[in-house]
Amino acid sequence: MSESKPLAERMRPATLDEYIGQQHLVGKDAVLRKAIESGVLPSMILWGPPGVGKTTLAYIISQSLKRPFYSLSAVNSGVKDIREVIEKTKNQGLFASAKPILFIDEIHRFSKSQQDSLLGAVEKGDITLIGATTENPSFEVISALLSRSQVYVLKPLEKEELLVLLDNAIKNDTELKKRKIRLEETEALLRFSGGDARRLLNVLELAVSLSTDEEIVITNDYVLRQVQQNLALYDKTGEQHYDIISAFIKSMRGSDPNAAVYWLARMIEGGEDPLFIARRMIILASEDIGNANPTALVMANNCFQAVNTIGFPESRIILSQTATYLACSSKSNAAYKAISEAQALVRETGNLPVPLAIRNAPTKLMKELGYGADYEYAHNYAGNFSEQEYLPDAISGSKLYDPGNNARENELRDFLKKRWKEKYGY
Image (cartoon, rainbow, N blue to C red; front, top):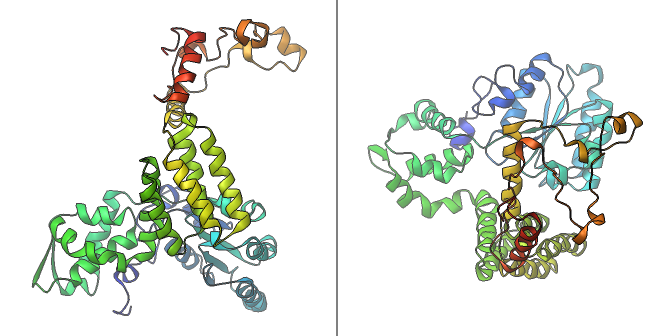
């Protein structure tokens, strides 16, 4: 390998055994490893944050199966490029040793027409498509292509995996071996990485390059002093896409419209996808505001639709209006906590039976068995309410939704307390 390449590129693994992380996919007997070893490889979408090995995994798959590998980036490729690659694979004809793999990085940036241009080749089996995305494929990949692909979710690397990467780089990289490096502390390196292997190795390489000492001692203080001021230039794309969206969300959650609109401007000036910004505001409207102000979700959803219709530059005004509205809204995470606690309860208690009174009874036999027999139709009772039991007996009385302390949810709490009295402790 050329020594001019970045450390992350020099340390890129070449086989599955060298690949670090994603054991749920490529570990022993894992689903993707089985597919690779069987040679029966579906088209797939690899979904996960930056620096977790999506591109590397695609290349390793092609090498393991000895298949031709073609790579395109959705950032700078179009329909013409896709058709050229597909035509090239067709022209190989009988000389092709195996079905080619077409890897498309950041496939979520392709338009509908660009994604449509892949369909025919995928359907006919001319290529095996591997798309990589940092965005939810359900939103970003057309349904026709999604239905013909397996979606594999890649996770941020764990601390232990990142430490292995650091150790391997210091011991085995041709350039780092020339320096005397002592890794005394790792917390700052890991914090800067955010689970991103590429970023971790970039930070390590930068830390080493900034020192002229014969022995380089990597400490938290050294990393914070030397690396922090240079990191934005070293990894500008990652910083804008992830750190700034985090600052934007936290500013709205913290009810600071000034900070929210500043970080919004940073994303706009950095060329961020406006729909990416609008989607994050929809999530915040439900997760952090919820029933404290139900109109927030309506506003955020309308913002997404308007941005999709209008486009830049005018949509910046719609984004600003919505961001400042959400920042100034009352806050509550009660709905978010309710579903989290409900899911935890389901995992703990298993598949509890639905009470007979509220079961569906579409057949005569089910009616004879008592399905729905004792159901109390709420509208037949005073105040349109009956103290019917709706939870399984084993978890009766479990309070999962606890309204927040704000004007709107205090009304909801009073509503529930008047009806359920002491049952749920409202």
